Image 1 (spheres, rainbow, N blue to C red):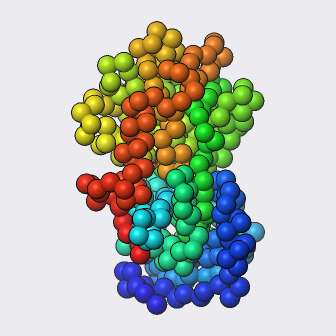
Image 2 (image 1 turned 120 degrees about the vertical axis):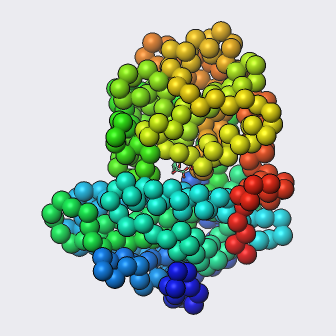
Image 3 (image 1 turned 90 degrees about the vertical axis):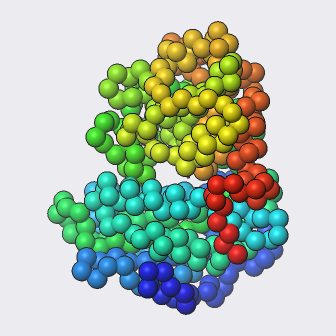
Length: 364
Ligand code: PLP
Ligand code: COI
């Protein structure tokens, strides 16, 4: 047992954990999100009782009443974070406090209870410890951790639920995109989030609404969708699951501002810090799709990249719209600044460079 906020975690080790040989086979080429580890964390919440029954359990199906509120009104939020294998055989998580804070902000927007930061962090650490053998080695490999919470009331009235489950699951992952630069499709049909909406919250509904736009991108032969703002339909916001940065010939960077309609990415924030430390100018300002095409074509834009927990930093090689397409830089590989920022980020995450910002949290 261990405790966070006075709550004790009861640990039920998997009685039939995946044998080492099978685990090694699964981890050899895990792709993204297909392989499940042996355990999961469950913490319950009920109005009037608060957070209770914190458990580490063998991973398995959960039972819900068919009227569970999440199935009807989508009161659900999640986080995405990674644990990395460090040189000494230990494990470290990148900026987990930032995920805990964003989870609380998402909960507030979705009228859900805010889990104490300490309990969120302890739940994540408990799972990483229970599944310590599932953290892969290798340059692009890590343990992707997915904390989430949903409304569990068996009641069909439309109101904030009074019962919730907070859970944490994990999956060993490799690179999100296969090697090389990604191609992006700018959707002029669908928007992701409007002012006053839920764009800044990491709620499942935002992703459900993005799937058709992502399918449109695939149909256009692209890897990812890019959304424009929902009012003027001119300014670049973000991608389906990543923030976006542009690099110009003078070495400066631009990224769309946190206007309330995009997710405040933790990788985005880290990139801004790392770039400024390298003496680069970073502007958080609106940038239109028209300008993107013009700058890519004129050569004023030399690089562009997507960034997020799953994708780390991935170069964008080509941007496509209904009007036409433009290649950025070589169109195939990461440019110099993208590469340098990726190295700085990944080296910090993996404990290969000094942790100047206190971003790395050692689990064991
Ligand atoms: N934007 C969206 C819509 C995302 O889903 C993500 C991924 O979590 C990001 C941006 C990047 O956020 P982070 O860097 O915190 O993973
Ligand atoms: C993440 O990077 O954690 C996300 O949530 C985005 C998604 C591509 C899984």
